[in-house]
Image (cartoon, rainbow, N blue to C red; front, side):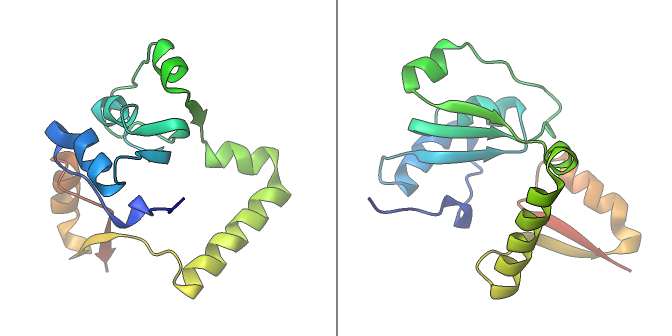
Length: 145
């Protein structure tokens, strides 16, 4: 089985969300979907999870907390997992420290890297927030002092 790192890609056209993901994966769809957005993105993400995959619910920046009929994960055979990093760190501080160390190691080695959409001067913070509100941002915005 060939692994595809879809994290190197992003899909913006919500009219073809599943189709674009299927194209990226050669029709396989995703074994692991990371959704920090919620709302309509969650709804579409459920269509992109491969049989036996996992959909990680991380947040709801879209504003709408989605709901799902349980027949969808039943029929598609996928799991929905809530991921709350702060709670994990409180409950398992030793494990959280090891995870943070591994993330640092991967960042330093260049194996993972944040997606930076744009860099703006700090005084343009309003522009940054408005761009986020309009949904224009893919990745992070850096504000420089």
